[in-house]
Amino acid sequence: MPRQKRFTIRYLIIAVCVAVIAISGTLTTVASATSISAVPYTDFASPSGATPAIQCTKKPAERSGAWACIDTSSVATPSVSPDATPSRSVFCDNHGCWTVFNDFFAEFNTTTITYGIGAKVLGNEHILIEWHLTGAQTVASPVQSRNSNYTVNTIFSGALYNGAVGKANGGSLVHSCGPNTRPAASASYLVSYPGGCNLYDNHNYDHNMVIETSWKLSGYEGYWWAYQRSPVMHAPDKAIYRFSTASALPGSYAAAGYNG
Image (cartoon, rainbow, N blue to C red; front, side):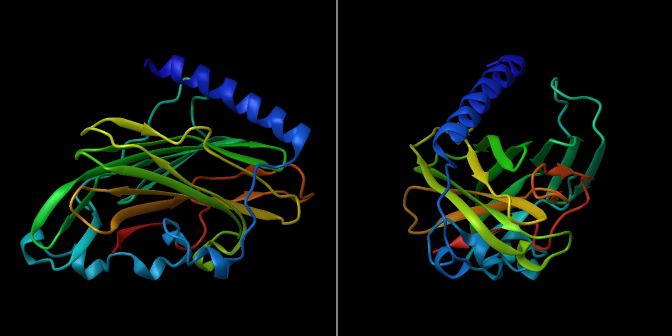
């Protein structure tokens, strides 16, 4: 689908979601940080499960167990959005690029996430996330995954955190969304999180939203995962939240690993 058409459809979806929320309340699942850490596909709640950096510095032939590693040899290139250019600020590292287009629109685009077991490389994963703010509402949509391998399932989940810049583990959990399981997909097929993650909170000054993408392969018990947090949004009145710069990230802002 052409990018312009995809964005037009996306904004129609966002408009409908905001209208529904205004009428019937927020589309949220409330959970505590303790309870969510025990839920599958919420590895962002326990980032210690990420593949150790020392494992990823080794060549695949020297690795052990299951792993997911960021490609440190490449740096992501910010995508060009037809909706809001030029961007206000961009921050890139080996995880990918965070772009803030304006007070209410930010995006993340990954570098290559390579995953495998032992010396065997099984595939690559790429992720795109957009965050849109409307008052105290945060909407992550589109959320898209493209895997180089055939996947049995792709699972999306996320959460809104009360956490300022640099806050350990993103801060404290406010609300969560998902998990949302998508069916099997052929290699390189674009998988999307329908409706995205829509969460509301007007009780804290600082927010960040995390999105986790998990994927399962045939013949393997567990799943590989990667998560990314948005730049921090701030609201001095707890009513209208705004992005500042792309580098204004919370702690534990990105990681990848395997959960078996």
